[in-house]
Image (tube, rainbow, N blue to C red; front, top):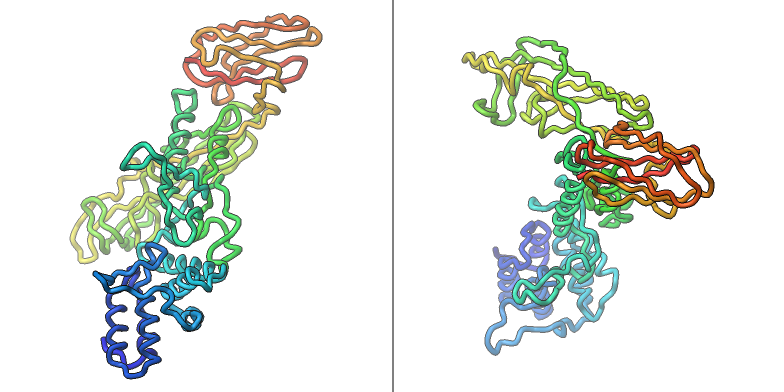
Length: 489
């Protein structure tokens, strides 16, 4: 490309969407313009642009790519105008790639100022947002914890020294605020949640993919600021920070008995059906043996109603979400993307939860061209399934308090196989009741004929008849409730 002047070159830069940190075409074009111009000032400005074109986004420093042998490459001393030209370009250019680079160069120059750093960061992020490969605005869920010490790991070469695996981010070595390190943190927290909330520990079911996703998203810590600054005040989730940073403590707390657990529901339950015959059905994507295209079909609506009565009157549902990965059914949309889908409405009254789900299937009669098909998609009405999760909270007073200092109650051994021992002190003799509750809040054992004494009480309970799992021991003394959680192995 042959430019006659710098204005034509600037116009080219404004339309450049190449994300490479070194654009060889840019370097070539400005070199051609420099070599053919007779004007000394234009030559100088071209030399500035050559330096700028060789400036590496990737390394965050100027590392010449064309230096070889004894040919010394210019340093920042090349800019003998106090960087006035670069400042002007940084102010005038609209292209985010070049606005970021000009400001980045100024940040590393003797003219260093925090405003240059802010402008560079903002425009790098805008550039990422508008790039086809970007995680921004692409169902971003979480960003990294933002604590640099959490990225320290063994040196892959020596396997002896611990190193910071992200020592050269743009501009600031300790400012890690993106998605690269969010994934391993998600994996770690999911593993902890799965290891805790499972049937082996007495929970009614293991956690599903949607359970992890919903809880991590809802209880994430929102980042108090948004980048770029022009986008402050964004709601959560947003395209820059997703739901924020994972809150490990909150996520684990929200699946911890005796206060919280996740109950799975759904399936099929004497569904109601209705039909809309001979409708046009547009399949947006290939599905099984069906090719994307236009069809005639009978649309079937399948509605199920499910009722849950939670076993403890103090329990209630605080959230309900669909589990589409396990479900079978389409939406009524046309074009239809052939993804599992159902509508859901809920009614919560105390410990009673009613869930109504509606999904659709289609009996494809023919193609638009008249070829006979006569097949179900995704299946006949009887095969449709809608599944969901209910997040249950037990609001029994003091049920979550297990601090020994407050409860003044010890329970050992824990876990146990056959016997547990309770130890507590009483100032005066009192009426006492002991109950064992399972994960759902159902009373599975009573110990009512136990006498108490003034002073230290040591009571042995036989739990050999209990199934393996997690239980809650409730000790009521003159109306005062004390609780301890234990595991039967």
